[in-house]
Amino acid sequence: MTSESLPRTAESPNDPVGVRDAVRAVPAYPFTPVDAPIKLDQNESPYDFPAELKALAAERMLARPWNRYPDLHADTLRERIAAFEGWNPEGVVVTPGSNVLIKLLTELAGIGQTVVTVSPTFSVYTLEAQLLGARLVQVPLGADFSLPVEGLKAALRENPPGVLYVTQPHAPTGFADPQAAVRELVEAAQGWVVVLDEAYHQFSGTDYRDLIRAGGNRIGLRTFSKAWGLAGVRLGYALSTPTLAAHVQKLVSAFNVGLLAQTALEVALEHPGYVEDRAREVVAERERVLAALGGHPVWRAHPSQANFFLLRTPDADAAYRHLLSHGIVVRRQDKLPGLQGCLRVSIGTPAENDVFLAAARDFR
Image 1 (cartoon, one colour):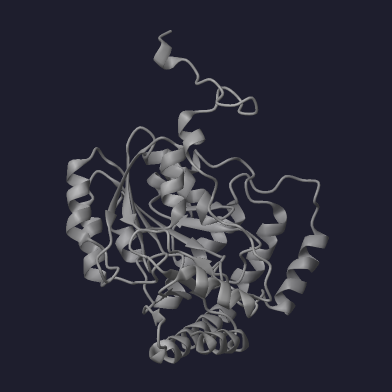
Image 2: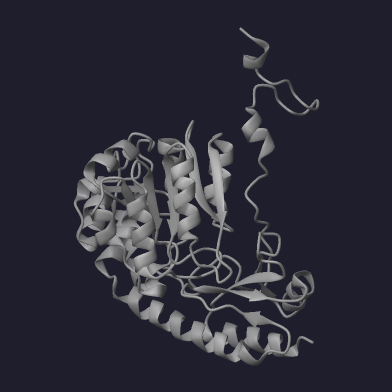
C-alpha cells in the first residue's frame, strides 16, 4: 500500500481518522434556523395541507398496521404519481425529498466523473458533488440570470461526461429561461445524464415533461414540498425512462418511504385541486409584492417566476436585521457569486406580505 492510499490521519484529537478528505473539506448545509413570527426564508408554501385532507390522512394512517414494512420501492406511490403525471410507472422514482434524488443522481453519474451546473445555483448540487469527490464545473449565469447556454455547451465539450443540472425556474434567482434555450442546452448534452429540476414549475407555468420523454439520458425532478404544501412530509420524485429510472432505483434504499408519508401523499394525489388554486394565489401575491417594491428608494426586487424573489440591497446585513426587527426572517444570499447585497424572500400569505411591505417602506 502506498502512502497516498493510506487514510488521512485526524487533524485534531476530536477529529476521527478514516474520514475522506472530500467530506472533511466541505462545510455543513448552509442553513441556521431563526425563530420569527413571519417565516419567508425557505421557499415553503405559506399554507398548510388542507385541514380536511390532513384529517382524512390521519384516519387512514390509524386504520393501517404500523408494524409492517411499507412498499419496497414506494410502489403504490409510483403508480399514483404516474397516473397523475401521465407517465409510465416504471419511469418514476420516489424518495424522501428531491434533495435525496440529487444525491443519488450525483452518485449515479458524478462520482469519478463530472458535475456541470451554473453559478450561483441550488447549493445541494455543489454540496453533493464536493462530498462525493466529483469534478465540479460551474459556469456563471448571465447578467440577467439567464442560462449561459454557450458557456455550458463549452463545458460539456471540454470535460469528461457526467451529470448536467438545469433548474427551471432557477434557484436562487427565480429566473425562467425561454424554452428554446433550455431545449438547445439539453439536446447538446449527448453522453451526459441531464437533470431538469422543476421544483417550482407550478409557479412559472413551465413543463418540460415532453423534453424529458424525448431522450433516454434525461430525468426530471419534482417535489411535494413547494406548491403542494407538504415540505414536512418529505417526498420528491423523478420522471425518466424505465431504463434510466431502473439504474437510479438501484441506489435508493429499500423501504425508503414510510407508511405515514405514503398515506398523506395518497390523499393529496386524490385531491390535487387545491394545489392549482394556491399556486395561482401565490403568483398573484408575488406580482403584487414585486410591483409594490418597484418604487423603493434603495432596494431593488428582481423579477421572478418562482414562489420567491431576490431583493438586492446596498447592505444585506442591515436589510436582514431590519426585517428581523419587524418579525420577518428571510434568507441571505449575498455571499454567492453575483448576488452581492441580495436577500431571498419567499412569498407568504397576503397578511404576511403586507407586513413585509410595511417593513420595506420603513427602511431608509
